Amino acid sequence: MKVLISDPIAEDGIKILREAGLEVIVKTGLSKDELIEELKKGIDAIIIRSATKMTADVIEAAPSLKVIARAGTGLDNVDIDAANRKGIVVMNCPGGNTVSAAEHTIAMMMALARNIPQATASMKAGKWEKKKFMGREVNGKTLGVIGLGRIGSIVADRAKGLKMRVIAYDPFVNPEQAAKMGIEVMSLDELLPQADFITIHVPLTKETKGFINKEKFDKMKDGVMLIHCARGGIVNESDLYEAMVSGKVAGAALDVFEQEPPPPDYPLFKLENFICTPHLGASTLEAQKNVALAVASQVVDFLVHGVVRNA
Ligand code: NAD
Ligand code: MLT
Image (tube, rainbow, N blue to C red):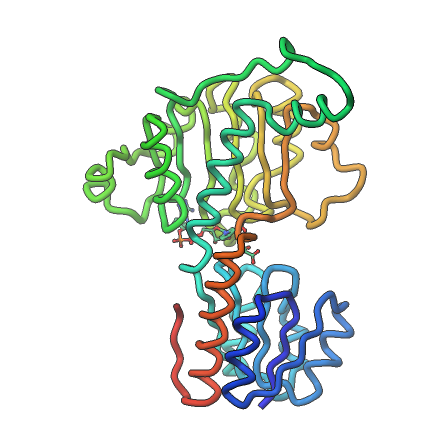
């Protein structure tokens, strides 16, 4: 049976697939037409990350596909209804990059609070701008976590270690459980005006698309800082730009974007208090090894043993 790997995964995973007797084809960076052509060559399983878009027309055009496996968490790039219609199993392995995504979020928050990317660029340009880069402490500040799932909970835990007050909005969590971790769960309307820093950890769904928009920015505290390492499309980036220009938002750190990569004339690049990384939340040696091992063993379990499971 044939497995197409269309986004890069760690070698450890590829080894597991080959040792199970599967034929592995690694072809990354394919255009939509190239992807469809590959899928027509008797592909039984495809392993993807975020770059490959398994849209309805791609899925429809795949004659032998039995499983779409995401080496990671988000399944927003897979049309699950279209896969269901064709009886194609969709699986992910969310646990493997949770800590990395949470640590990246904390790193972004600290970099934002202390102007680390801007100060690095300034020094490399031969300057010594000590006065310009006045930062702020996170100690004693309020962190608002939107989405208190796997990643949001770890961010909250690490923020408690930094002596922050942590408040959260997540209609699906048990407030008593959260209280045991020292986190106050509240409505979004209560959270937005209280938080000094806001971090987003919800999945991209029909409900969360464009969720953080002008209406929400208007309710935030003046001078709030926003960190977004969840999924492009949840934050309305033109509304964020306006909120930053007006001074409502004092700084923003984005790892994920409505369009990846963003266009060269991307407005937020013009703002000095905007910092960014190219979707690096899960890009650690540890997370990539974890997800590659998990996704490969899930695909082997399904294709060779007929067992469906998520990590
Ligand atoms: P999770 O499912 O464990 O947690 C998501 C939480 O969001 C859940 O607790 C859920 O109740 C909550 N939620 C859902 N809809 C909500 C809404 N409308 N309002 C408030 N809360 C809502 O997922 P996770 O493992 O924590 O991952 C979260 C997201 O992070 C993923 O969906 C993925 O898009 C993203 N992610 C990004 C990277 C990266 O590289 N930047 C890495 C891993 C995951
Ligand atoms: C995920 O959802 O797991 C992330 O987007 C990680 C990635 O594949 O880069």
